[in-house]
Length: 198
Ligand code: CO
Figure 1 (cartoon, rainbow, N blue to C red):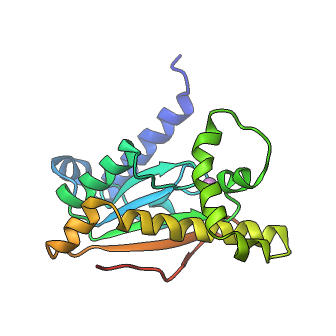
Figure 2: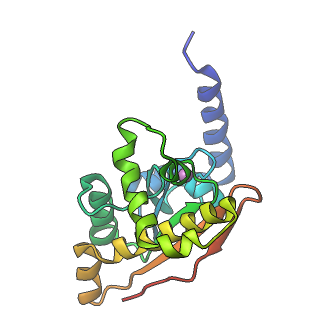
Figure 3: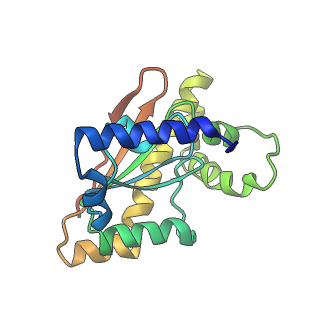
């Protein structure tokens, strides 16, 4: 017996349904992708990129990591941004965080998490930049929520400061960088109104 049989069953049902509803969908899509959006989000299983904006395959180019961090020395994330901007010519880059982010919460704790602490250090930096504002929030849950928001805003700035994005703007390419946050408890997205378009 094949391992994880239920997943293969799900896949067959899914592919059959799409082919039934839109004959030729996969054949057409296999020729090329031209997504308008690059999604940079958290790896959290509860925040699936295409699904929460209800878009089919082919529309969203995706990069996810713990706590949706954009680091200027991370060749993985930078390569995704470069390909999305220079080759796919996406029109929108969305950095999407979420409230209740385990990565953000872990960065606020003093407990050790092993290797991952090196990654979480980027969130601790965000905390350090905004310590005054964050320490003024008495409610610990509200403080965590605000750090989730500030982390998104910080990562939007990091995206804007990449050479690929600034080169695109210099050459007149249409490109908007957005900061959004998702609420796990109601499934809704909120725009943090920090869109940068050049
Ligand atoms: Co998260």
